[in-house]
Length: 352
Image (cartoon, rainbow, N blue to C red; front, top):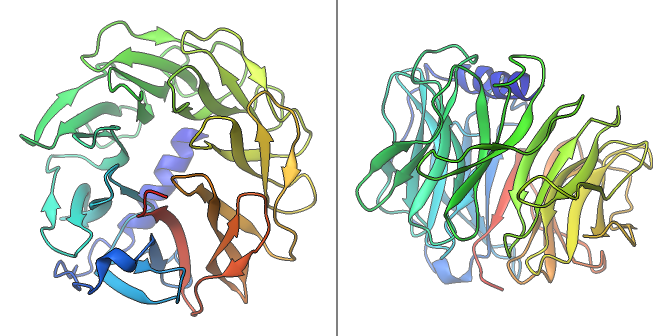
């Protein structure tokens, strides 16, 4: 399924690969007032994936366009909040770019014979991890690399003929967690961890199910992931050696999109357990699940603020996705964007 997700993303992006991309960013004023960056898609982004990257302030809903006409399924903000990484298509191939949040200095980081999918930043902001099919355009062979931004050098982390995707750096930058079908080609995705130099690869899961989107706890002591090993999609944690797996949602509904709170005490996720996609939290030990959103719309893509006091998310209101913000307990929910395009994939630009 993870392979299918990756393929769908690529097909969506390639629909606009023949478009002329405007690489001239729109430079905003008063950058310090903006708290959130996001992608503003055309309304039907499944057939027209062009989007603009915007910044917005939650104080007065003031917006600024950062750059126009990119083709990316997500954006990632650097840890010190001064750069945004995104994907775009050049000559029919997907590459990785970064831009300063003042709209200057657009840099293309990858340029090879394959498609390069954005992963995430290292915690010190010096590297970006990604996956690529540069060894062949088939999705059957995707490898993990990282870029050292000081030299723009690329380091290969995996070297096999399998699909290796969804990488994430450990907080100390010494290891990378990812999923791969290398032991069950095209049939099962398991979670692996490896040193950044490619050594000491260890398989962490080995059960009859697929495991997705692993991420490290803020202290590096746990790994969070979602899995369908129990026939429905649940959220789990485990130690970095694969021991002490814990199903923290354990519900017949579909629970997905998990993320750690900044202090590591709670997990934010979406679930259809009450009939449609809503936003929930649960303690990291699986206790005290709490529904945060209560509205007639589909709510997706929740993201903690860096201090953990707020949550931004997308909600399908008035036949398009708009951004909303609420406090981390679900109170004081208010709408942030008002337009006819789809506002999605928010990231925080502040440190609080």
